[in-house]
Image 1 (cartoon, one colour):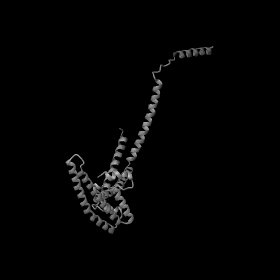
Image 2 (cartoon, helix red, strand yellow; image 1 turned 60 degrees about the horizontal axis):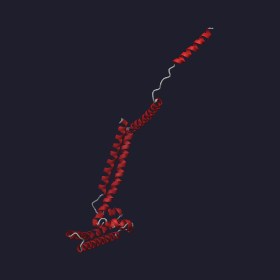
Image 3 (tube, helix red, strand yellow; image 1 turned 120 degrees about the vertical axis):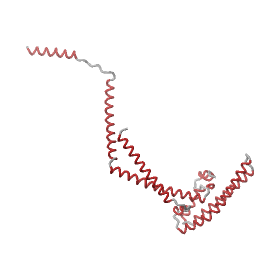
Image 4 (tube, chains in turn green, cyan; image 1 turned 90 degrees about the horizontal axis):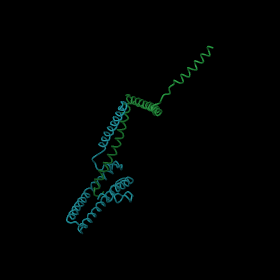
Length: 108
Length: 159
């Protein structure tokens, strides 16, 4: 008898709860905004990964051994290429000097 | 701009400056060291001439220069005559035409003398180097490089 009473009360309570449930009104363009926020969050994560990569690279180039080696390589390359260019320039100047001495401008 | 990017750009600028500075000073040093005042130094280096060959080439060069200067003076005088004849009127007169013909003859004479000098110098060199020298000098001075299309501009452009 008592059990039957309890079941009856539960059904009534359930019906009341179902009636009182409020279905929320979504703001306009809710779904679109959700997707945008998801995309923004992903873009921020990518940007953060780039920043981390840049920081790691900068930390590498600021290491004394790396910095000295880079300076040495750049100086060697500059000196070698400069010497090659200087030899070519000197050769070209010497040729021009000889040609100017034997062939006046009016004949060339 | 964030700090790592600024550091990276600074490092790139510094690296470029180090490379450019090394290149510039090395180039200047080499050019100064190798650039002599002798007009014939190019011949010796380029055509691998020994001291005996260089002495003969120098003798030919020194013999050629006064003749060349004499003809150059004649050409300059003839150009003045052409300019004077042109200044007298607005037409290409018979006198102007005659002066131009004479100027052309002097040019031809000068070129023939120059080519003969190149031939003489080439004979003072080892045969292979002599041929290379002659071809190079004809290419530079007359424009004989086997390219018929190049002839008009190189042969007449600078006269």
